[in-house]
Amino acid sequence: VREQAPYAAEQKLCARLGGLLGVEVYSFERFSERLLSRTGHTRPSLSVEGRQMVLRRAAFRKKAELSVFSRVSQTNGFAQTMDELIGRFKQSCITPDDLERAIGGMDRETLLYRKLSDILVIYRESEAFLRERYLTAQDLLTEALAVLDEAELSDTYVYVDDLDRTREQVMRLLEGIILRAKGVTVTLRADPAPALSALFRMEEERAAALAEFCAGRGIP
Image (cartoon, rainbow, N blue to C red; front, side):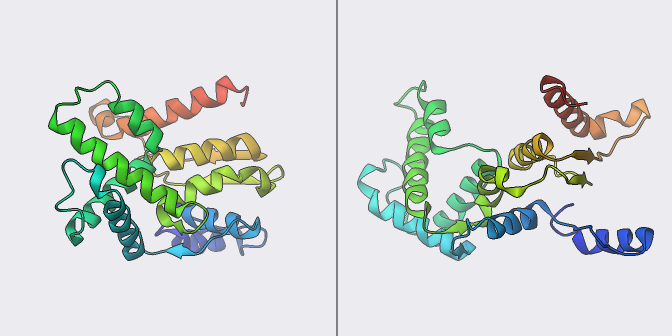
């Protein structure tokens, strides 16, 4: 379920099943935390403020390589903006290498290229510092996917309600669970009325993507 919904979901399940014996309700974030804890892959957690300190450190260390942001890189507003941007990159599973490939064919004289190059420098430097040291909320799902084989899901039925359709991280973790669990059921919102179909286009696209993923791997 979504991050804010586990308690409400537990109440509904308890009322319907008469208890929660053998049932665990998680958000994807909480599932990831539990998995990393059970498999011994935890690291100290870093808060939003901590992430921003790491970004300021990265910008300071690489100031000579920044062509656009060198003057503003130590301001609080800059660190906050960079943290939000990199968070979106991570939600979309865009790594520093992906970003480097994306800007590789751009005109190097443009302002956009120089801005993206500065972002890449800071992104790569901050990731190098965080790796093996700290775990941030932005990295939870990706880290969990990397150790999913240790989750022992082969006898587990998984039900996903109100899928967060906006994050590629969620979809990749879900695909990993589908490959390993005994059974997976996913609910998505939809409306049969043609006039309202546009409102649920993203759900339809996610459903089609999941169906294609399963069909390509022989999963009924």
